[in-house]
Amino acid sequence: MSEMFMKGSGDWTQYRTPDCDEVNLHFGKRDRWTKSYDEAMADITDLVESELRKAQRNGRPYVMFVHGRSTSRAGEVTARSQVRNFMRSSKATPLIERSHCVQHETIFLAKVRPVCAGITIMSKRIKIPEEHRQVCVHHEAGHAVIARVLGFKCGGAVVPVYEMANRQGGQATIYASSETLKSWRRRGKFRDGRSIAHGQIMIMLAGQEAEIVCCGAYIENGNGRDLEIANGWLRLASPPSLERWRAKTRGLVRRHRHKIERVAQALLAKRKLSARAIDRLMKPPEPWEGAPSLRAP
Image (cartoon, rainbow, N blue to C red; front, side, top):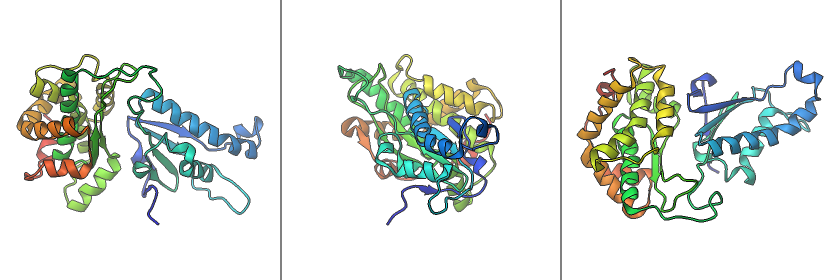
């Protein structure tokens, strides 16, 4: 039987990122004045579901549940067992992407499943105009290609055909930073902790820069979430200037424009590409340029 979740190891704080909501599930001394331990454990399932639904509504990619190391004995429950049981249940299926979740002794990092186009939120589906789809596929191709160029661990990409809740965007999957760090160490490419922050900033900016470089235009208000994440990483970067990182990202996008165009056209035709399909479109492989490109501009 294959593992349902990725297994976490080491210090749990390494999984903290600016784009991650954190929920503390510890049962402390103060809590004992308001409810019993059993009542608190019974409430955890509802709390976990509520936090995941809130993150999904707000477009947050991750929620970290801090439950501690305690394990359940026969006939007893703990915050840890409650969280893990819920994540394996059918209730969690529409809320999380299990293959991208991290199960650690101390925390559970849940990858929130983005709301799919054409379901529930809009009573009437509106087809995205063709010119907007062209911009959208280049946006997601920009994320996917630049992330790979910088050596980040990535998944597939998808673009919708219909608008949903006034949003026209797709998604390019970039795995948790901890997975990228592991892959760098395996390949002997790791430089320093700031490389993650620098890379995340450029990956977030690459979407809109690809729209501008490849299409000559961009969708108004289509980059707000990317900018929010980039600004969150900016406090860990050197220098903390978004415009300087934007200029560097644009140069990187221009250098790899032919790959972005190739991925964008495939995404336009198929609407969804797996990680392996994008990797094939990136060939022939060029020398890994993560180290020089991740340096400060």
